Image (cartoon, rainbow, N blue to C red):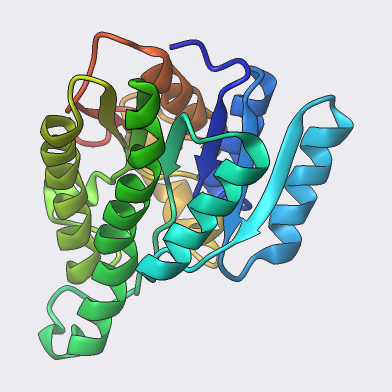
Length: 246
């Protein structure tokens, strides 16, 4: 699918991978809706950046864990921009908890991470796909994590939530075929604000990767765009991690 002139919603689009994806999609001619929950200044900054460079973008607030807010967001985007063709399900949260501290993985933590990372992605896919199905075309990319493949990560609930995202991708691909393609991009370590305060750990990790480099948000965004464009692919879990999981 050609991205040019398509309406793309990027959740968590003001920072990190979401920010990079918003820019890359705009550079390819997409009309971008930058979703945010708390990072209003970041979202508005990226909208200004896109518009100054000749693109078209809006910022829109919604907590993806709230189904009603998601539906209202999607309806607003569709009314203002004429529909929704592409969705980058990027918004995610984590908690840094030692894996052997099972008591710290409380009900509150499980609910918080699943509400955003899993249910939030489903709510956004369901709402956006209604518009895609009307036009009998569309594409969704979920952002997973190698934590969902290896079982390692910032916390046990986070790793399990990302494994669920990988499963959600396959189930949605079946549910929305043949008109809407659904794939999952699975980053390894990425140099974003999630690593703030852990730069030393990142620097120790990089030389041990096959490519000896930590991925950038732009690396991930490039694969996101390619996945949205590729018309012969759905239900796929695509890893991009500089060889981290080999």
